[in-house]
Image (tube, rainbow, N blue to C red; front, side):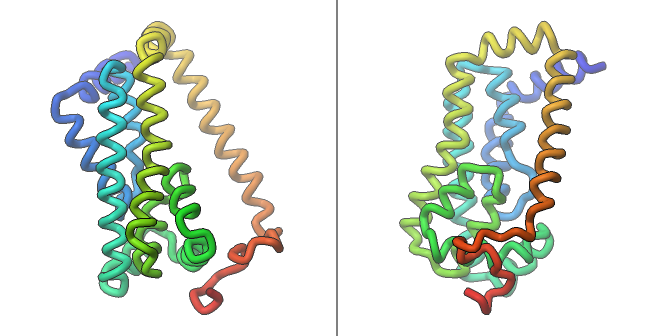
Length: 214
């Protein structure tokens, strides 16, 4: 069953229309969709390692355009749409802190969110809401998104064939290791979350809980 599912997924990831789906998910994830495009990008790079950089570039461009869309929502439609989106995504409590970090750190905050698992959509909508300089926002978004996507593309472009050969041969073992790592990651995050109350006194945004504090 596992082998059949793997083969089916690889076939879909290599489908000609998969690039359009990759661009679509990359775009909407940067503004309102909760599921990141990284799994699809990884599968497409795994299915066709020689086109990995192309896939990563598609991801980067579409994601930055989606981030710009999120910025526009925050700038023009926050009360009508943005506030509702933030609430639906469960990011209401994080919004004041995100606004504080963008005002304090500017491009660095956007770059960090664009290149890490921090919800990028939160930062794009917030950046528009606080009227961050648009050029600065776009440059930071390009740098961060390129970092997180192009590294994947380059690695698969040069090392994808050996990686795919290993997965093809040892699918069960690779799946088990992956599940173990995911579980370990959740445990680590849970342990770190136990220290949330110990805020860093040197961080001006650590204790921000409302927009009035900014």
